[in-house]
Amino acid sequence: MLFICYPKCKTCQKAQKWLDQKGICYELRDIKKDNPTAEELRSWYHKSGLPLKRFWNTSGIQYKALGLKDRIPDMDEEEQICLLSTDGMLVKRPLLIDEKFVLTGFKEGEWEGTIQLAL
Image: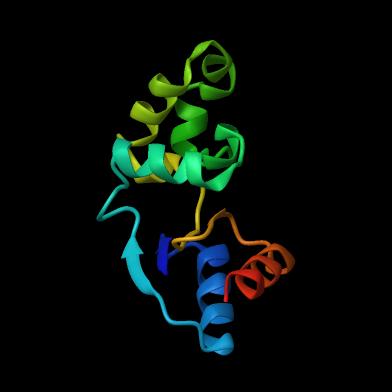
């Protein structure tokens, strides 16, 4: 599994602690140092079955500074993916990616259920 997070984020820290307590092995990737590419985001989005809006960090400073709440509805999928790939801080985190699933944000119940089904 690939665990993508921002180490200073409290939610990411909570998710990492949860993974560690469950004994789940993962590869760690700092989203600020190693931003997801457009190709990765496109692949994860399609694999996830989630709406693209679930990949946006809507509470982030960058999101607000760029006025994306008003701009995104007028953007097509490819424009959104390209913009997301420009700055890791625009991407919802943490992300947990496996061959069978993609999870955005940390919701313990959702992660527990999805991981159990995958294993």
